[in-house]
Length: 305
Image (tube, rainbow, N blue to C red; front, side, top):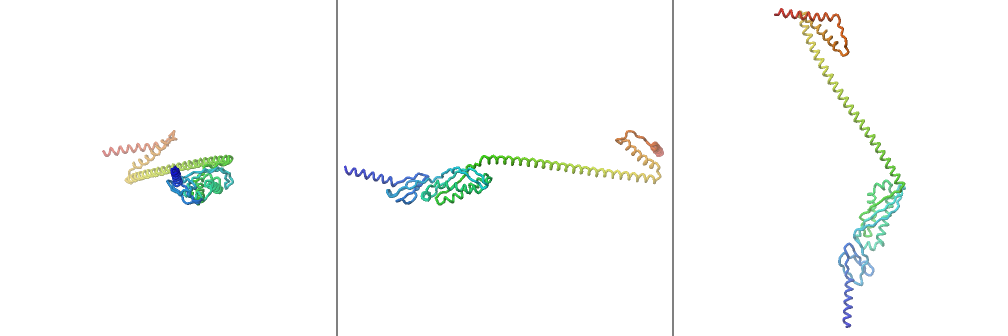
């Protein structure tokens, strides 16, 4: 009976010892092993063996990427504008031992460090820069905080400023400023449109006048050419009449004079403001000379026949 009790005790002791020696670390976590209160090693996910009664599990560290909310705080910008800022930070523990033993409260330490650097970075900027360069602010914060937390075995993967809230009166002023700026741009655009339209109209007028001048120049050239040819024809006719006169033909002189006279009378008769045509007395004589010429021509024709 005593042997049986002892066996049971030994069995229980063995089971308890095995349970104390085998440690199953879940995925996404790392545990630290301590021996007599000092760090020995880091247990990775899966089954791990430790010396029971000598070693113990120290810290259970989450090595998955985690997020921390950075609480709202008031910031005084470089141009003395007071704004309320909050954000969010993402981080991952890369070294469980450093994260466990290099800093007392890792999350609180990272939050305090982040909030301090937010005040430093954003306090060195004007309000306009603050509102327009959020990506630059995030990048500067990430670089500074990541360098500061590196000794703790932590990697800061991202810091995002969620919201920047200026005071209500400042928001109202910004709204009025934005409206004035948009009105200014509208007036400038309208003036620019009018200027472009005036330029286009002037260009069109210029092209029109150039084309009209070109047309007039060509018309004048053609008219001059026509007058030149007419003058050549008249000169040729005069030459022929002169040859006839030299040959003793009096009818040629009469014919030439009568033709010129009739042309002049025709121009008078076709004038737009001519209502009444009064022929001079010599006209009858000229017309008679034409009749005489016709008779002479008829006589000459009869003689030829």
